[in-house]
Length: 157
Image: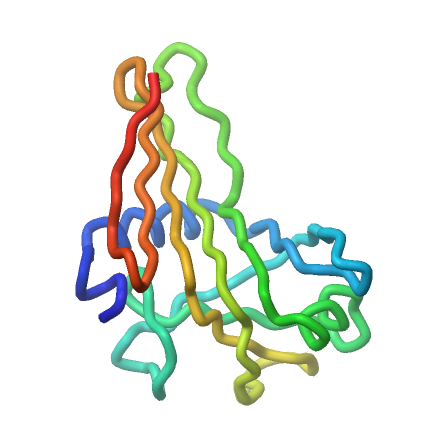
């Protein structure tokens, strides 16, 4: 079971937030185990265009890295990552109008370089967790999905 078939509306909202801007934040693990954050871009391949792989938000999440980059060295050593959506400020006069933010966690799996892609390493994300955070009224809403636990929603005041 995957996020698209379990909770398609949630998956679509996560995708919309990730697509709200170009630059995302990627967290990798350094050799000593400490975190490293780097800018990255990612793409959603439509399910109809996919050749296998874990799908989410109406497709497979893919990204590339420049040869010789520190983040590439990190993921070649330990492919576990977290990726944060673009950070958009909540409107000061209406926090409920905030689109929210979204996060993926998972493992990067090497894929073939796309024909039009520049030299580098390319990956698909095997997603182990998705989190969506936004505001309704005076509550912070946190929705999450995990392949073994499914979808959950909690609120905080």
